[in-house]
Image (tube, rainbow, N blue to C red):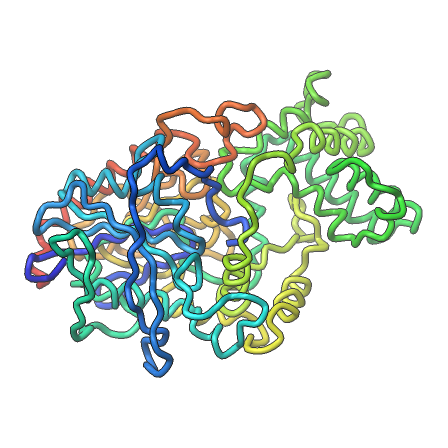
Length: 522
């Protein structure tokens, strides 16, 4: 797509891709991505990956190039139409192709806007993930190689690509080398015209105890009270109890997760691994509509009793609450719920990113009276794990300033829609954050004028009630097992049709307002 056809780029981003502003232009893993069941090849049309030659280093230029993977759907494209680029975030992008580019079992925002505006749809893969690898990613990847996985380089990848491609008559995207003409690490206004940022954190900090604060807010009050009480009891017993008390508790905890645990094995388990059983119900929380199935089994003691409004611990004591909690973990059986196979490339790459720049250490906060995460997951533990995984090349602590320099919680971009789920843990780092150390800004659904930034503290955005992470970029129209089994209902996004249609509708209203002025920016 060449600029001679007045092509403009719309960026749809989710996960940890950060939107930032420069002169009015704009510019997220382990457990942070959506589980998408494999799609049979016969169920969708063939869509082969394409590759674009990308500089490893946009700013030094001495490290050669690598092939960055992407996919295209030009079903609705007409000459002069916009390009809608969906950035897949920190994961192997290939499993997303059927869902977001071919609309398997539902609709996707990317394809809906492509249809409405006669546009071209692109699914973009992040460097160091999937098959977009500048270097092999494993335990032997060097510090010198890891330095090219950072926010600055990843942002510039999209700018470089957007300024150098065109759609050929064969339907292939071709490299069109030309002067970039944009400042480094910024999406220049002619390159990215508008952005829909779904569930996008814009602020980075080392301490992210707030992650599970969002989960606690989503619980029923009796479930929250019991979860808090059980967590505090387990932490106190493992920390201050006798050796016999700690060994007995570890045996009870680990036996709830799997059969065949011996007392000897349990006694040798670490405190953090044993207490981590209490986090099993949150295994899928980021994309869950709620943990209601677990809470229902807990509070009714597996459907054998009427729940107490104030919880089991307050009425029957902590032993009853702990027994019911572990029985619910066993009954729901999270280990048997389908999930993705381990992806060592993505796991290691994401770990480098949060250890080096993002932080986001999701620790347990013992000082928080409503904490549902074990305090054995501490800031020190996170940092020790980072240092062990990457003995060389890391700063003493994540360099969050390299992210927050783009504006963080204070950014005021124009032509950007920010959407969040009310209980999305990543909302805590987004513009819609309600955490005590955030500006507590207010979203407005009033569409701003083209190229005009909303006045701080307001921002153009929408918070979906009762929803979680990336609830609005696709919608399920054909039921599947993940949405019909009571144990897994709500465990996979999308969980509701309303966020998709409300988010899409608002973005289309904005584009109707903004697109007429695009030519003024050329």
